[in-house]
Length: 108
Image: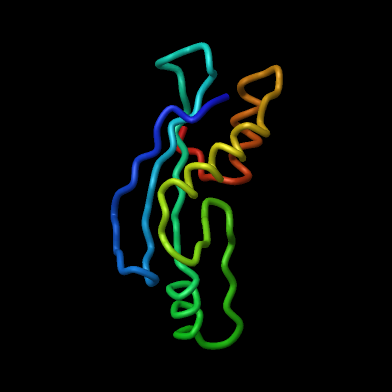
């Protein structure tokens, strides 16, 4: 498995207070146009804290598909995504996609 591309969109961005949506195209290394698409969000610690601060009672956040960072750095995020994808090297592609779904939101 390898990352084919990472796309960022829906940027609500400030230096240390942001949330950004993205998609990752992940597929077998030996096939150029074969991939599954996964969604994710990158959120700063400051934005995450602000969102919880406005909630009343106990706040809960499910974290599949969320990357929490102090400041936005595309290179560091790409390295972390590559690290996750490199751990998913089973014999069956579908098993790889299922395992990746525990980290990212699968669209297919």
